[in-house]
Amino acid sequence: MANAELEPPRDTPPQAIDAVPAMPTVQSGELYRGSAFTLVEGRRYGLGWQDWPEEKGGPGFVTVKRGLLGFLKIVKRYPLTKEGWAQAWRAFAKLDRNAARLALDVLASRPSRAAAIGALSWV
Image (cartoon, helix red, strand yellow):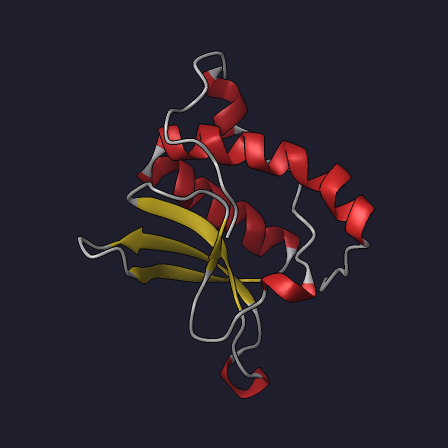
């Protein structure tokens, strides 16, 4: 799971959260069955992706809610497509705007990291 500080950046304009960021490249090592990979840790709501068998729809984006004991529960599942990403981002931004600010920072750092380790796109 990605690491991000718990405090959201103060300088992110509200319109940046409302705009859907570019869909991230999902790396093969980030697709887990039974557990979601999330972009931001330590927040009540999260955004990420999870793998399922093809007969259950295959991999997808998810919005998640963290329970009191730290376990993640899927709020909603979205297809692993550009449209699915847009739907997931909008839902996530409505659930927790501060977590969305943190996720923007994580997403901004992903392209350089992905290029450095040779990302595998699932889209």
